[in-house]
Image (cartoon, rainbow, N blue to C red; front, side):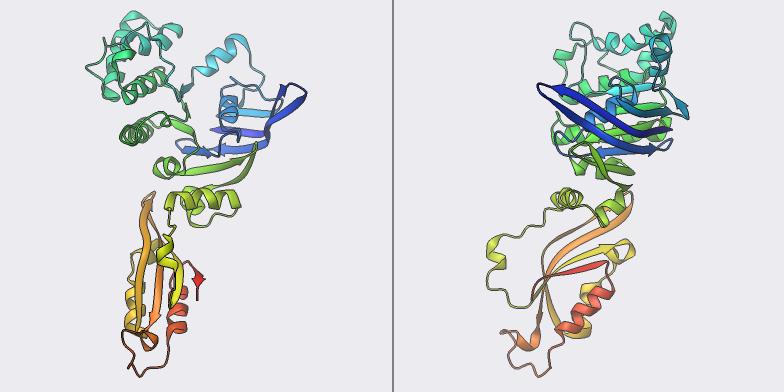
Length: 346
């Protein structure tokens, strides 16, 4: 559906040239929700705006549904852009127009009749949950409601593609979650292909199926969202993923540790198996889970735990235990039944 081939985009800034996007290539399949994530200044917005040629590349090609649109201009480009909707971080609504007229605006531009507009706008208002807000003005709406208007306006002309430029970064947590659910519902009901940029991996995890990681204008890693969270390769990707799990322990828990401290990654079915309980029963070790969580990404489980294993033979609470230590066997058992085990302290 969307193909970007070796795109490069530069800007002149005083006495230097800024390379906003460097030789970037990616492919978004029809019906996908594709995420592009990176820190501020990574080139995400510039890359997104190249898809509808709001930002023309210095080199490379942009293909939409197999058609090269890179060199289109004038009326041809305007027709092609009607296939591409866009929603913005700060809504970009016309404050002197009510909700109905904001949504009707792209329909007027496309030359639709008044009758069509009078039918289409209420349909869109119902879809985004604002059926009672047609005559309200943007100043009377919450941030989440304004973004719903922006979404309705973006899909008014039945686009094939919807570009989402940080659609939740200006919203509170509850509104952000509701907007992401709405975008997911629109994708499923209407089959619109979506490209979404964000600096938050939580957003990517919640809605996207594929993701590209950008750093300093380059795409450094691309893959299935689950795989990226499970086995990130690049250092920046690892940092972004770790920030979403937030498994840092308070200092008092890591002082005077006795035993073996493990960071354990569970993937797939293993995330739902009682591996630690089995280790306790088989090898007689005490397991103290200090931190962790199990999440479901695209309906597939991924778990990350920090656990302290203490052999009962050396446990001051049970000094008379006659057994030899089996702590090493327990660690090997856990390692063989999980995706990855990192020894943080031994």
